[in-house]
Length: 183
Image (cartoon, rainbow, N blue to C red; front, side):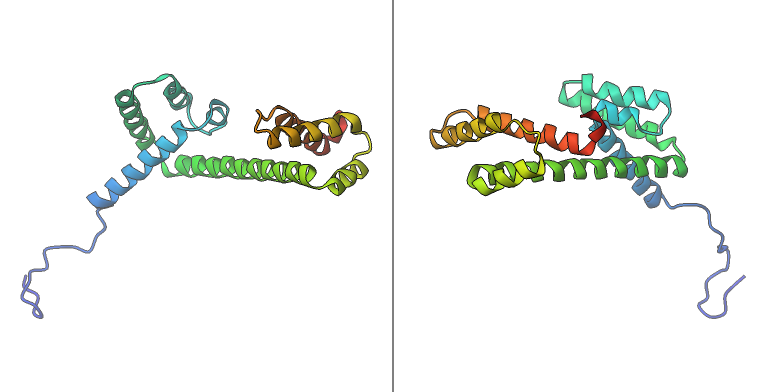
């Protein structure tokens, strides 16, 4: 049958036959990228993912592979396993991945805060006074010794032993604030 407007036949229906080849390839590559991202997580993070055990095992195997070519092949294999998952499973994995990234951002922000506090303690004695007022149970003598030694290490370009110890004390102090029942 001829279409009177443009002379073309009306053999094609307007039915949806599914995604195009290009769309299928985009989905495949997106899952490949997701598999690569998942394989770079720590083992604890991988264990927390909402995926079947076989996929978890294969993700955990990535740490054991050392050669570049083998890693590349393994990640392609992980992408193939990911293609077998349905959209709901992928959405659950992506939600968990976002939660993991959010936790990492919070941890990074905490470390930046502690680093600023350490720098403030090294540069400003008034900050030490404020810290002591906020936390009266601190070992004042040890804290002052670490600050003095960290300043000396910095001035003499020595390895930052006291500088690191000071950070660990601040980190433990921050941990005690987060979990007051531990004290």
